[in-house]
Image (cartoon, one colour):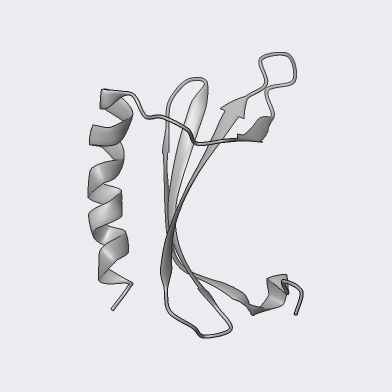
Length: 79
């Protein structure tokens, strides 16, 4: 069975943005299944100003501290 985007529902989502990067904390439920936490990063293309998806990879201390409250809020949507 292939992934069907129409079955993927976002139950929660908030973004913390800095000058050149932003991190989104979300909770998704696929086909009304178990809710799961998702972390994603986008970096700003300095030439166009557009946001471009990037591998999240590692977090700087400041990034981790900033998204921890968002992760706590996300946990409330996972019950």
